[in-house]
Amino acid sequence: MKPKSLLYILTLLLVTYSGYWVYLSQNAESQVKTLTTSLEKKSIFLTYDGIETSGFPYRLIINFKNPEFILREGFINLSWKGGALDAFFQPWNLTHMIFTGNGGEINFGKEKDKAHSKSIIPESFRASFITAKGAEQRLSIEILNGVYSNGLSPSQNPSLMIESINLHGRLNDSITAEGSNLLEPKIGDLSLTLRDIKKPGFQTLGTPNEFQISMTPRGIRMPTFTKEGLGEWRNQGSTVDINGFSLNWRKGTVTGSGSLTLDEAFRPLGVISGEYKTPTDIIEFLSLAGFITSTEGPRITMGLKTMSSLFKKKQGQKTPFSISAQGGGLWLGSLKFKSIEPVLN
Image (tube, rainbow, N blue to C red; front, side):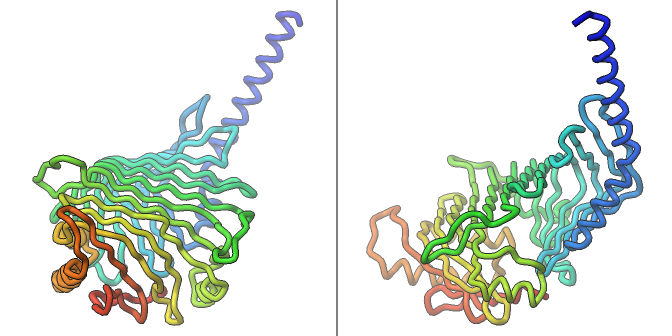
């Protein structure tokens, strides 16, 4: 090929690509509006005052001005606002979205119960979404240096400092995995890891405090988070399997696994079992995280100590436990230590 012909081809490719990038940039706002409209059907809301585009030639970067993110679906109430947000796309692969941001405040909990909601102020965060149809959909979120509170704003009442929070999810667009005689088909995976958890003002001694959990939803894809949708999901035998979880806090450790579904009143139903060591430290963490109240803590401690006395064990050996969710309560043996509400408001 002659040098002049090669130059013509390269020039044509460059002009074509540049035109394609400009087209994407000029249509970014309409594409974002199309995306937000489709998300609203899933009770996910993204609002902003305006956008700016940059990143030529390798990427398309969309900067959102005064963004706010809200997810309200059944018992889930999650929001974020007050920070910076950028979206990154590769022009040749628009099914992979990467979001980066910093600052702001993440709130999750009941909308009508602000006093018991939970909040995180992140130093920075990063999220990656792969949304191609007919393939595996993936979600990955990383939050760095989060200040956590189980009630008031983290800046006023910090409960825990968390170096990193990692959430990974995978969902099949269609169910292809086969079940078994005992298990429904697997439709995805979800894992959450909290690393280097500390009380404000305290230094970690020895092994860093950490929490991990891995879950697998089985059965059918839940069509809508409504009475009808949840009912169909439950009636078809769908479950959420807790493949494993572990918590290290001070000298306390707890590990276990289990399986959950919903009862006729849409309350959690199932059993979680495992083993624990140094229950007072575990209770302290659960209290700081806001999972149990000051009145529930002593009841759980009493139940765990009673259970420990039933087992003859050597120094440092772990004690087995079993917690059941049934009848609108969490039970440790015959001791009901917490009431639980329906997941559907």
